[in-house]
Length: 496
Image 1 (cartoon, rainbow, N blue to C red):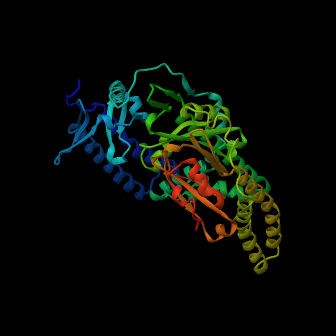
Image 2 (image 1 turned 90 degrees about the vertical axis):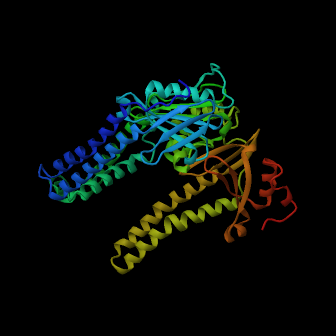
Image 3 (image 1 turned 30 degrees about the vertical axis):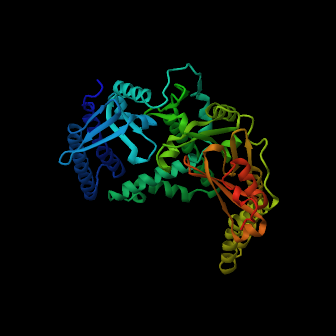
């Protein structure tokens, strides 16, 4: 009923009560680590946490009782506050994104959180917690239908859907090792905060004792294998949780929808008018496995941290699928024909700079430290320094050559293409009309090498995309060719 004040679903209170699971989980973890005898510090910590969560639950009850929302003919309004009444409104013609999110507890209760944004950051967003699933879907459809330029369903084909075979790309990410270390560190800090010393627990003490008694040439590979196995399982589970039931589609002629999630469901909407391009991500391991992921370069997706999560339109998947999604999102074959085709190579000075950096920053510091310690302590470290140099130098030089081969820039149709990186290679296709300004950056060393870094500024994504180490002589001319009119006054002046 348009125009009438409505209250969030009463089941929101149950979702707030679910917060008490955290203290109970902490108690169980502490009891397990101490053999059923938690120290007094743990009980005090748990009591404080329980009181905090009880306070938050009470605040949630008051918030629910004082929260109302409605959709009028020209705006979405939200009224909150107990002592101080606050009313916020977003004009319907300015709404650019409407997202639905539900964590596992909310899904179990049939709830969802709706967030409507204008693209103006957090000040231009309204969040409704929590609506029934049916009400959230209805309200989302209503807001998108009344946004500017809305159109009826056109029957456009689905751009991409989840495929169980894509799980093989999950281990080709940082989380294979980083995830294990992050979880272990978090558990360690949680136990330490409760007064439990993890290194004194029986299991950990026995594990280190057995590790020290065995031959290192056996225990070290086994430990690495165990960490890798745990990381692979964790990466696969995380991938499945984030991208299960994934679906990418143009629901109408103006809005791109991304739906995904197993336990926590997410639905992100990106208006076509806000799309400025796409980014093809090919990290080193994923590239070796023939995969890639895709992000949208779009405004209105929040700050940089939020943008990283909400801009992903394709998870790690086969490279052919990624290229096809890029073409479908752009509405052009700027990347689909192959991002490496038609790009201008960079001068050899760019290769020399990468070779020097790889040796000076990647190899030399460890060599110097080992050599110094070997000279001061034991000659064995001198042999370690020589071995490190012999192994690390070829690897560093190979990565430097790969980084140089990844460099490229060009213009293809109405899009500007920029490519760089080796550990995290990315190819960006930007709408040339979206480029607002150019920035030319050089240093003492880059001036001596005759190269300059050019940044294309856009009001979307990461705000600026750099063309690294391109020829200084042709930098201004290329910028003028790609986006005429911005730097034309500098064409007859030398680059300083």
